[in-house]
Length: 125
Image (tube, rainbow, N blue to C red; front, side, top):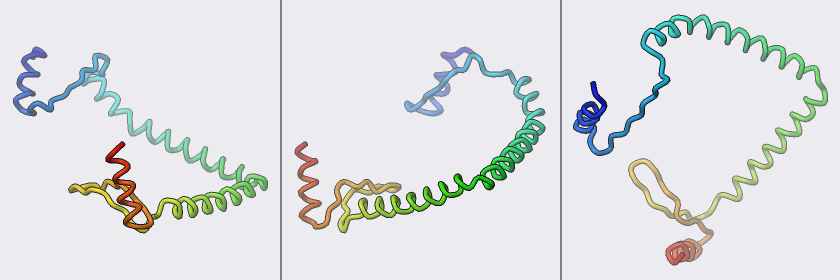
């Protein structure tokens, strides 16, 4: 089918929001079928290699005392940073708009006056 004819038909089916892309280097149906046939074996080899790699990494790192100390320090720092970030991002009053799926925050503050001031500042900006 010619591209212009196909686009007209697709336009009738999908409307003005129609979009499309063309990949001139895409594999043929036969090439896809061949790759699909080999895919389970390739995935099995990949999974086996990944398991061996992860097991070796865990064995090496478990034997490294310095790494284990760094892990403990990192986890403690991550916990402290997450707790501080949670405190910083919480406000008593949050105002925004809502649609069927999302609530979009427009302003936050410790009082209604803070929220209204922030909204007025955004409206004049």
